[in-house]
Length: 371
Image (tube, rainbow, N blue to C red):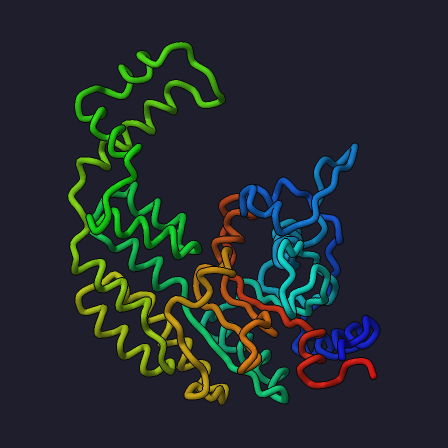
């Protein structure tokens, strides 16, 4: 049976009490959030996942789709140093296609740590506290590290434009794969792109823009010329080597215990040394987890974990799942999101890591729904 809202609220309070015991401060961000901030972060795609409304004074508003963004805003606005926060409340996500276990309104309970002196220890603590809180449910634990792929792309021997394009699509695996295949010459560009590139071989961008006729649209002629020049440079760039693409493929295929994954990644780093700093961070994190008694041999490390659902994470990521029920969303998830603080902090980056639990789903799996 599905738990009642009162049962979920009580479970949320119980879980939040565990986080309050760590010294976290309870916060309660507004349910209505400014839409422009979320649109700047995620683009127009978020409209398909959020409830948007208009306010005559405040403009477009969204029903809170998560807590992390408003908590970061609050922390940045207060100018605090090291801090930890906990929250409990409802979030709202539109569901265009009904799916089992996924509702448009549900509770989240979370813990967020900011500006910790030891990044590895902060990550180990968050994972350990979530693991301990959910231990009675016997969930499957998974972790990964978006920072590995970021480091791999940054270390590619190719143009900055190509690296930037790949970086933009880290969280869209199909688009990322399509770009990687095109840049390596495995697949040709679309016909329309090929025709444009051929023309760019013969004409300069400014001549092409002037030949089109009257200027129409929001982009200036200079912006259009710059884009065409970028495409021209891109067309002249040599393809990515097969060896580089193979190394990325090998990395993304890793699905092992954390210790075995680290060993395989060290082997890959022999030919891709750009991975070394990220691997050093991973090793320190695993050491901190062992020191806390985390049973790492029972955790699955997936190098591609978090690439479809965790867009603002840029390092360590984790999740807890109901084994044998893949249709259900994660009972808990989280990770590191330093880059998000840089965006919301107007360039001031603050080390931050945290996560959230779905208390309603936890109750359902524990068989504690309404009678």
